[in-house]
Amino acid sequence: MAPHPIHLLAEYAAPRLLLLFNHVLSSEPVASAKLQAHAGKCIDLSWDAPALARLPGVLTALVPVQNWAQGHWRFLVTPAGLLEWVPDSAAGAADAPEAGLKLAVTLDDPLTAARRALRGERPDVKIEGDVALAEVAAWLLKNLRWDMQDDVARWMGHTPAEMLRVAGARLRDALQRWRPAPGGAQASRN
Image 1 (cartoon, helix red, strand yellow):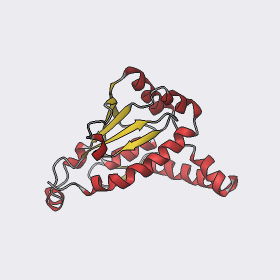
Image 2 (tube, helix red, strand yellow):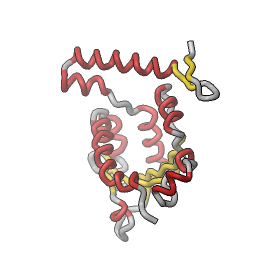
Image 3 (cartoon, helix red, strand yellow):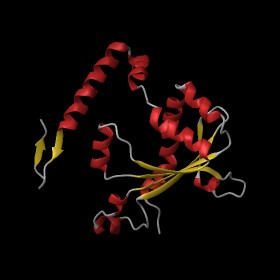
Image 4 (cartoon, helix red, strand yellow):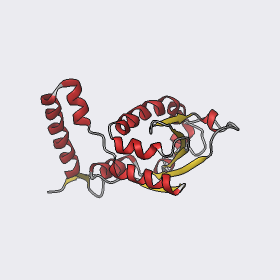
């Protein structure tokens, strides 16, 4: 079957997302140091979105693919304590390193995922493989945060960064108060 457009875009999206993740990693020296000990090992990230797989048959008729709500990316830990994306073509090569760690993420439907993210909750992640690397991955998932305000302040200055932070906090609070009521009507919590 033909690949899903999401999988085709992954080839272009993964390196850009990885740049952002490596930026966050490099801004936290402890995180980079923890990863340096595992240089040369691979981390396999796979995801499953069962809610997306249950979309109406019209959508699956438009995009005839199998398992389009599932995906897989492989990353190599570099000697600098950062990650490098390994394309699918290189991952299947005979000289490609074995996965030291496998992370399997189960994604909710987009609205539930957004709601959980606003509450600071993370998706369910199953971790298998190298115990020491799994401990580092768990630490990263728990402790690594992007200081977006600091990045904006470097680019635009502290006052605009603070204004954006306040606007973002107000938007987050408004979205947390809103919730769909049973039957499709909108309601808000007080």
